[in-house]
Image (tube, rainbow, N blue to C red; front, top):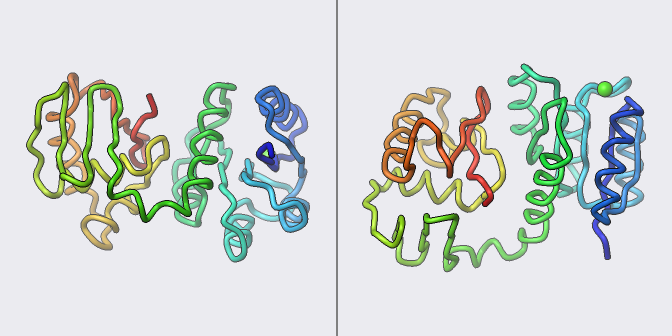
Length: 229
Ligand code: CA
């Protein structure tokens, strides 16, 4: 069965642009122009993914996420205006999976949808992830042996660097917020200094040019993302 995507956007041209792009890739689409319509269509049609504009005429997009999250594991990709990093972080912390910044292109839209669909379909096998070998370009992580290789050579990481790398690798393609990473590795704290230092050290070991990272990119004001190939 083809994946079903609900497009929640009050601006018709943008909604149309998204619909055409997704239907070309053989995804099924339903459309909602408001938050209320989004909630009722999600409950009645059980779509796999929601593409959600945060600026809606009736309910705040953030409240749509919070309400949907009470009863659905649907993947949510939010659409936000440029420069509104705080809004994106709030949406991600409320349970959104990823975001797109307006204006965005078809390639970016499809990449976010692909990663989110993978997340939805792999949730049930997450527990088997420990025996998984991650590979991206010349970088290879063997979770079972706790071994990291670059170009076939072992690289030595500290336990914290290893945790940071594997956390991002296990969520490849998806943005992880500073807060999410801090919580998983250092415990609850808003002081991201240790994260920044650890990331700089990790990049020195795995990136050819740490200033132009190929594997882990910085999402300014939001967090980090392990790139898909
Ligand atoms: Ca809007």
